[in-house]
Structures are given as C-alpha cells and as structure tokens.
Image 1 (cartoon, protein in one colour):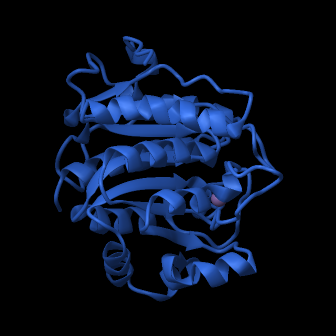
Image 2 (cartoon, helix red, strand yellow; image 1 turned 180 degrees about the vertical axis):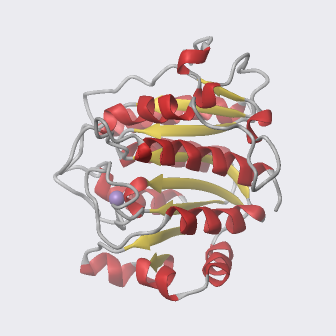
Image 3 (tube, protein in one colour; image 1 turned 90 degrees about the vertical axis):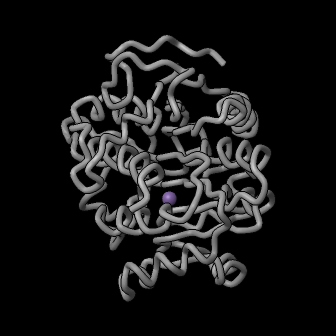
Length: 291
Ligand SMILES: [Mn+2]
C-alpha cells in the first residue's frame, strides 16, 4: 500500500503526528465515480469531507471523550481504475485487506457507492461471519445494471453473495422484484418514521451478526440536510435519526470497517460536507465507546 506520511493539510480531522503503525483507524480516500447513472461529481467527495473535518471540534460532548484518541491515519487516495468497476473493487479490496491484516479499522470515503464493495469483499475475506449494515435511499439490489454487475445499483446483490446477513435501512426507492425478494432484510423509511428509534435499532441489531461492516450512502439522508448527492430522494432520514440508530446498534457489535459514499460537493454549500465529516467522527466514537 502506498502509505503517504500524511501531513496536517490532508489529514482527516486535522490530526497531527499520526502514524500508520499506532493508528486504530485508517482513512482511505477513494475518488471514483465512473458508473454513476445520474448526477456525477462524487470523485470530489473524499477531499471535501477531509477538508471539512479539519475544522471540527475533537471533543465529543455526547460521549465525553475524544474519539480521535484512537488514532486516525489518512492515506493517499486510491487511484481510479478506469478499465472497469470490477477491477476498481478488487483494487480497493486489496488495499483494505492490508489494513485489516494489520488489525486496523478502514474508513473509506467515496466516491460512488460501488467503492463499498471493496470494503465488503475485504471484510468477508478477513472476518468470519461478517454482516453488512447498509444505509441508503435505494436498495441497490439489482442483479445487473447498465450492463455491469458492479454498478452502484447492484452492490447489495454482490454483498449478499458474500455475507448472509445484510440489512438495508432508510430505503424509499426499490424495484418490485427486489422488494419481494428482500422484504425481510429491508427497513423502509416508513418503518423508521413510524417506529421508535430504540425498537428499530433492536430490530437491526437482531438481524446482524457480531462483526459488522457499515456502508452509508449519504442519499439515505433527507435532501434538506444532504442535497449534495447524485440521486436525492425526498422524505429521507434526519441526521439525528441515523446517529441515534448507529449509537445503539454499534454498542453491541464489532465494527470491522465502514465507508461513507456519494458526496458530490456543491460549490459554496459546505454544510453537507461538514455533516459527512461529523458522521464519520461519530461512528469512530460509537464504535469505541460503549454507551
Ligand atoms: Mn443511494
């Protein structure tokens, strides 16, 4: 892996003095957006998140701790493989595998959601019985899309081939066949809206195994809070809902890696970039601190 000795201007959360050896978390930017069907521009997402993250307060008042104490090292970007999304997934998986071999938790920043498969494949090869927790407005359950099995619209179909337990949360856009096939592993937005957060979180936890890979497509959020996505779907999750669920679910699990994908920054509107950075920081905190 081409690990840069990152200096503060490009380090996640603006952390200084981080080393790969000592860090528990390894942030990996993946500026890749070649299979997008609608909006494009998510290749600029990773750097926008890292830039926003440099201005955050490192003390988390909710957890009464500094999640960054776990050590977070930021690597060089993984270069896009323009040949095919499958090759790109393999490239990411190889690099994430090295991080997992070293006993560290990878944080991938997309880029389009296809990059999640790199994390999921590596996790399924390195850990027994890995389940996938997937936040997304879309079920991403097509067998094939626009001629590719590795399109962003297919990633959960590929994930289910590797991991028996996959749960999608916040879904509000799905084809009829997927709705029928995967009805027991999808928590729709209407379920989130209609239920208590504690009940929804318990339901999600019960559907997952101990080892969890988390993938967040930012379009799961309501476009009012997260307009910077290629395919915004109305009536989405609030930031507070996703963090409340993650806090409860990660409490009893072992997080083996996660990604945050699909940020397509809008020039001049930085709040969504901050949201994505803060979400990453909260996930680091929730996976460390048992609340
Ligand atoms: Mn989506």
